[in-house]
Amino acid sequence: MKKVQRRALSVLLIILCLMGGVGYFTFRFFHEGEKWINFTANKHIYSGGMVIGGAIYDRDGNPLLHTVDGVRKYSENESVRCATMHIVGDKKSNIATSLQKVYANEMVSYNIVNGTYSVGGMGNYIYTTLDPDACARAYEKLKGQKGAVCVMNYKTGEVLCLVSTPTYDPENPPKIEDGDDAYEGVYINRALSSRFPPGSVYKTVTAGAAIENIADIDEQVFDCQHTFVTNGQKVVCSGTHGEQDFRTALRNSCNVAFGQISIQVGWDATTAYAQKVGISTAHELSGIKTVKGTVASSGGSNELAWLGIGQNTDEVNPYAMMRYMGIIANGGVCQEPYLVEDITTSAGLKTGFARTRKSQRILSEDTASRLSDMMRYTVSNGYGDRHFPDGMEVCAKTGTAELDGKKKSHAWFVGFSGNEQYPYAFAVVVQNGGSGYSVARPIASEVLGALKEKADKAN
Ligand SMILES: [Zn+2]
Image 1 (cartoon, rainbow, N blue to C red):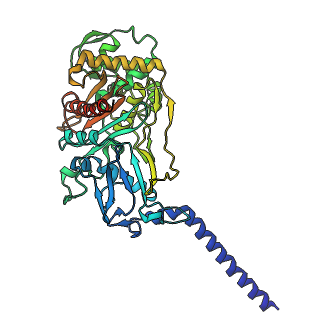
Image 2: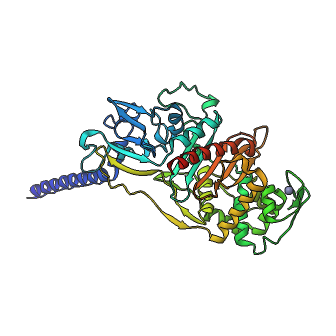
Image 3: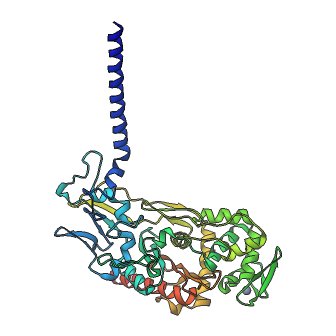
């Protein structure tokens, strides 16, 4: 009898193990099926690293990637191919933030019930918000320098231009030798995944924090005699600006004034503001994660002064900077930027993909409009409207982030068009490019020009 009992118990144990195993497999299938399918070596989905199905389009309906006679093809235009490689993805799927990588499921139309089967077997179509002309112009104007150009429509949140260099023609990939400086970090989307010291563009963050935290900031006068000393350290300005008010201090990009303003704002308020406007936080652009900025939150008054000027150890992400410009431009309301407008089947049916169109008030109308006025004054009484497309009423700030040693500064230019007919906010950075005014500004102006031309034609 005991023998029978023992056997029954063994059988029961085996059955339990089996059931447990099946249960575990089912659990993993539902949870990780996506990962198994997306594994780059899966020949049902990838061929030599490329997703085999689906297509990606720009906002005008031109293919950025599609299949022609069984062959995967990028855009017909070489500049567009180079300019959009980081978003579309290269042939070997080296770019972690590309649509081919992040939207691999949607492109091959994988789901838990049907697997990768789709009617017609051609996968899904992803319609992006990218403007091909703006992207191509940004790429051409960067002229082989390393950097990033980000432009969004601040009224709708559509990302129009997101270009990162170095890049290459994904249709004709070059042979890249190890340590080739020309292709340093070529698979990183600098717009989304890199951080740079901000230099004076950070004064737009300090100015915002000052407006919200110093009641009499507009009545204060700042006397710049080239340097001032705080916590035993000298803060140096690029000029000797004499007496100036808050608005003029931004136009002059005065380090003495902004160092003192930052100290008045204090660590807590400046940290809270950088967080609120998303300069020190990470973001998600249609499911693609961006890197967060590193902004110090404590230290001596000298470090606080340098932070406010943008020359401490802090680093910010170009995309986050564009998003902040969009908030100011849109009266304090953030239209969360997005890149994917729609996903349809190859037959044109919507897949049920829900676009993330989100808006939230980040700054008061008063803060946003005072910041806009200051940045407008910086252009109209500083850089000069003649450098920008007619009637755009550009509000902006340059940055020339000085670096240690002999390396050339990073050139920055951030801002937006104050004319709501052309609702574009932008951030441009050129790595070791030199002066923000002479290197980054012309790139922004060129891309704004391309967008304006198109908007004028459409009207
Ligand atoms: Zn000064």
